[in-house]
Image 1 (spheres, rainbow, N blue to C red):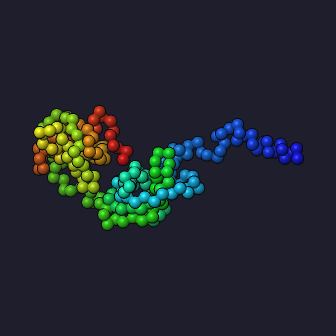
Image 2 (cartoon, rainbow, N blue to C red):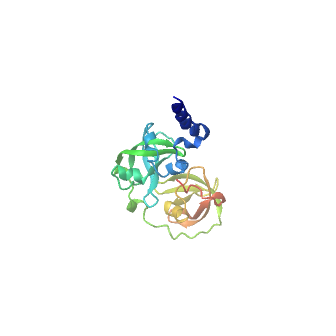
Image 3 (tube, rainbow, N blue to C red):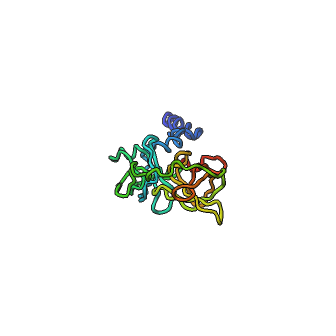
Length: 215
């Protein structure tokens, strides 16, 4: 009996005195943001989400889903796609996934279905490059985003009431390292006359910060 008590005490001592010995990987929080199968056994609280592919970069190995319910974007990792039989995900495609909540937000754990009938394939991403030679006639001015549609590939900025709207093309955003714009956001822009009126020739986030580079 004494030896049993000794063994019990010996087994309890590490966990009582060292909370880190719970079996969790100290780097799990960082790992889970890129590895959707880290701690797969805990994926019991799966939630089904329907939405649209916001963007997906196969070279980076991940992308994001815009949920129909208005919740925060859902991370979609390439390993999830490929495990469930998909090679990539095209912007605009409809998707149904089961998600698991991680420390940095929701992450797709399983792809239930994907409908590419609404997808924009790479060759369709941008309309003809009719505006790429726009020459800036303005200085670097502060402007506000009035409207921007990533799927259609363009939007409009305004430098204030009484000024002409400034057309901005997705290609211009990409050229200067940005991925999207949101209504009400402020940017710095140089613009000039183009085939669609005033058009952005250069654009950058206000303050020089990376803006919406992540997603």
